[in-house]
Image (cartoon, rainbow, N blue to C red; front, side, top):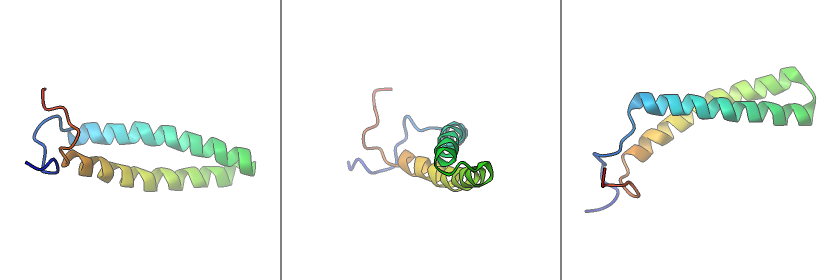
Length: 79
């Protein structure tokens, strides 16, 4: 069987994917804000960059996680 068929094991729930998305994006957004502020020395612009990045990357990451849940390659089948 191809490793790219839908996996019926070790699949994250939608809520778990959502919580992982939020925690990762908050971490990434803080890093983006700090880097932007170090470079630009402008709180308003740095905050705007961080908010845009938070919104766009949260949406992208959630769907990226859900897509990887349908790929069985690399998942531990022993659980």
